[in-house]
Image (cartoon, rainbow, N blue to C red; front, side, top):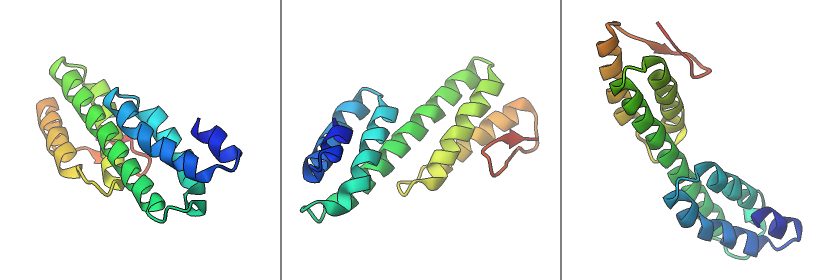
Length: 136
């Protein structure tokens, strides 16, 4: 709906729809759909009458990224407890990448959980390369 409104030149409507959808989609865990709606809206946010819209949509996007990161962090913790350490590391890497780019933060929480996993695995340390891949 956001993309259709934006394509029709209804920039104010596109942004308001995206802003309204954030709560609905995020509460149901539809973070990717929420992010897509916000990205479509952000592309035309500067053309709206409402001057607060660009900042509001960026804040919403930061919150969605933080929620996505925390969901991945929780999945990592669950996989770690079940002994699925490779899958846990994948989720922690995703969470860490999202947390490091988010204005909301959350890196410290991910680092703490990742440090516990590294200790459980018997490694002294793991490094995260620029592509978000963990290595010994």
